[in-house]
Length: 115
Image (cartoon, rainbow, N blue to C red; front, side):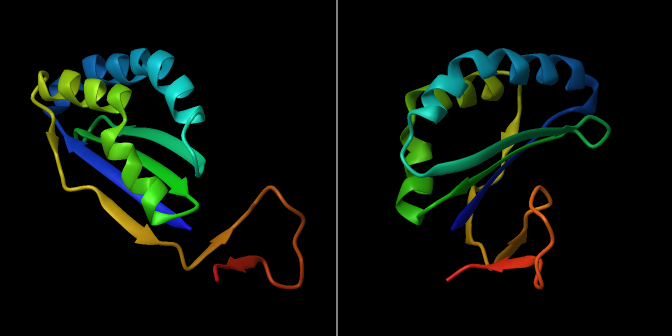
């Protein structure tokens, strides 16, 4: 599995406006994300005080994770945030080593190791 992390930095004084744009983007992004092959989970987060927005997604393969970069709806959202002076860091795609699923009963070993 692959973890994809996208981070953008902005003026903390713009936090309310950035949060509103993140919420508005949900309407177009969710259907497009649901249609993507290999997407397992998607998270959007905001640190208002630090002026940082983060999108984290979990994928079944690197090829599928990298396909996110060419998703038209995501490119359109990126352009909106660039227009608000959000500065994006390079996207990270990293192989997952293990994870803990807190929604499942605790087996002898809680950690789920990736092949």
